[in-house]
Length: 496
Image 1 (cartoon, helix red, strand yellow):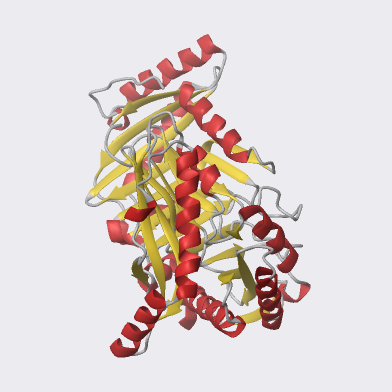
Image 2 (cartoon, rainbow, N blue to C red):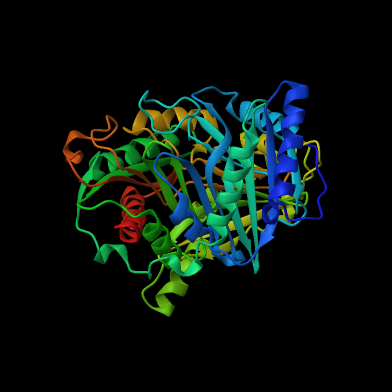
C-alpha cells in the first residue's frame, strides 16, 4: 500500500487536501484502476457511539464494536468499497482477496502507526456458508472499507476518511465533500447522546415464539440419545423468539442498554444497508491479534449467578467441579489448539493450558473460560485463522461437520449471523473478531418473508432473539431449557 508522507493535517488545509486527491487520481489514470484515498489523523475526544447516532442510516452499511473493559470503541459508517459473497465455502478466501486488492489500490497518508488508525475492513460472516433462505437479510460474507471511521482507545481518538477515486471524478466537488464530511464529524458533540434509560420501561411489546420451547426440549432429548449412540460428541442447539414493538427500536438506546447491563462483554451492531440490524453483547472473542500476538477464548460450560454471595460461590464451585461442564469446555480447547497447530502456529503444549479454567462471571450467567495465546507470523493472515476456527464446538459441536448437519436437522430457523464471526481486520495484520451470541436481528421493514405472519403488523419493528445451549453426554434437558430461558430473558430485558 503506497503511503504519502505529509507534515500537514490535510483536513485543515484545503489546498493540501486537493493536492493529495489529485495525486491519487493521477495514479488511477496511470493504473487504469480506481484508487482509494485514505486519510488518518488524531482528533480531539469524540464518542464513536455519538458519531454512529449522527451518521448511521438504514440505507448505509455500518459497524460498531465496543470493548468497555479495554476502553475501546470503533464505529464505521458507509462504504468506500465493499465485497459481498452470497454463498460458498471459499467466502473467507474471497474476502481476504478483497482486502488484499483494496490495500494494493490504496494511497494512505496521515497518522498511520497508532492502534486503530489507518485502514480497517469490517466483516460479517453468517454461521453457515450457504444461508438456507434466499431472503436471508445478510449474505454469507460481507466486508467493507468505511467512508468514515472513528475510534477511541483509552484517551486517544482517531478519525479515518476513505474515498474511492475514479480517473474522471470532479476533484473540486470531491475535495469539498471530504472537507465538509470532516467538518461535520468533528463538530458532533459527545454529549449529544440521550441519557441512558432502560428500554423495558419505554416500549410495550408482544412476544411470539417461532417454535415452541417444548420443541427445543424434544430436540435436546433426541440429541442426548444420539450422543449416547456415539453419532457425535456435542451439539449446540439454539432457540429463537420473535418480538414486535409498538414503536421502532432505537439503535443507540439498545447499545447503551447493552453496555450498561453487560460492561464485560463486547457490544456490537451491524447494519446491512436495507433496514436490517444485528446487535448484541457477546462474551466470546473468536480471535484478537495485536502486533503479532493472538488470543482466542475457549468459552463453554455455563451456570447461573446466585442471588446471594454464598449461593453465587456455591454455583461457581459446582461449575468448576462439574465433570460434564469441564468435558464440554475441554472439547473447545482441543479443537482450537488443533486448528492453530494445523496452521503452523506454535500453541503452548496442552498441559500448559489449565485443566481447571478461569471463571468468566457476567451479570446473570457465568462460564468456564480459558484464553489461548500464540504468536502469528506475518505470512498467516487473520482471515485464514478465522476460517479454521469457525465454528468452534462452543457454538456448533463436535465433530464439527456432523454437528452442523444435525443443527439444520433440529433447528427450524436460519441462524444468519447468530453465533458467527463479526469484526475487523486492518492493513497491518491486526484483527478483532467476536462471536455473535447474546444477539438479536432487528428488522424495520414490514412483511419480511423470514418472519411469521403473526409477527408482521403494519407498524413497529420486529426482532428475533437467539440463545443456545451445549448438549453433551450427561446433559439434563430441563437444565438446558432453563439456560436457554435465562439467556433469552436477559437479552429481552436489554433490548425491550
